[in-house]
Length: 369
Ligand code: IPM
Ligand code: MN
Image 1 (cartoon, rainbow, N blue to C red):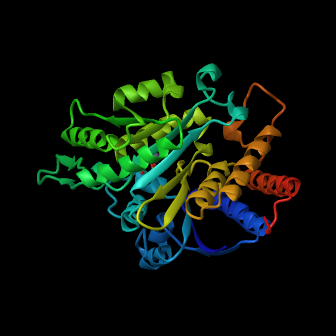
Image 2: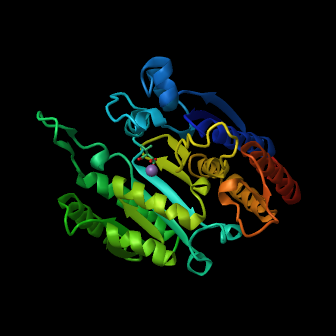
Image 3: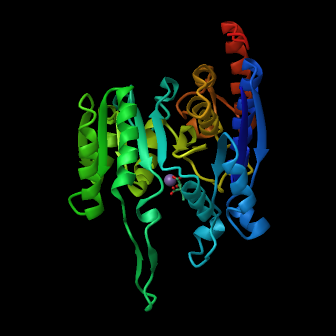
């Protein structure tokens, strides 16, 4: 298969981790006889430095004309510590989501058995957890009207949802639940917020079309608590942009580390794949970032955008095998054991690539099957 992929490294550790994600894609193409053509583009702080714009037109044009995007992260501490700056790296990411119509953000939270001890949550509570988040990505306070009143002392961000926005993400969640454990948990704050009441009403309506799927509603505060108390009680979770942002960072602890979590943003056309971790400037350039979230994002890309199930499963298997052999980056290392082999970013990527080759030759995967 012939496919065009844009690598969008972005800021901070984005460059280090997408390099490894890309090398996994290159290896997969080689094993399966695909033609992947790569291009690269700038976004975020880097793009501001080069052009003054966090999402230059040239980048957007490239993104609109490819088959899939592997993205790193955006952000820079300079902006975090100066809220008065008007042009910010994150604007590039938000504009990209909006322009590409990426309204559904899938964040699968699955714990690799090998990492049971790496989490700060007790293993007996975690074991067997498998949650798929659908975070709405182009609405909510992120895109509602925002501003300051003339007095300068009052600021607002409008939390706003339209029925069609809730409907389309709800359908995606119910459809996914049908292929899993047939349960959807919708998270909102309908006891307080009008936008949440519209959210709940709409999800209930959509749910009627999926009588085989169990629908439960939780308020976001209670969902935050239950996620840690009993993560196994969740299957598919559907929620708005802000609640989804917060809950998925929390849920990353179920998977051991933020460094393990991949995500897919899909919608109208092209799909974008990225780790849920950010630019992590505190560890940038040290070579210690965990590339597995980017590698697992590449696995999602193969599956969702290219329909390459076998290829995607091979990547996941290679990650599993790498962990099984005791290889770890520092974020997922278990201080209690000494049998682990700590690798830097590049060597972790290389391990996965070599596992890919090994497993493929054992299965005798080739371009012919
Ligand atoms: C995420 C990030 C972004 C978000 C930031 C960088 C704007 O935290 O993708 O989860 O809030 O959506
Ligand atoms: Mn986030």
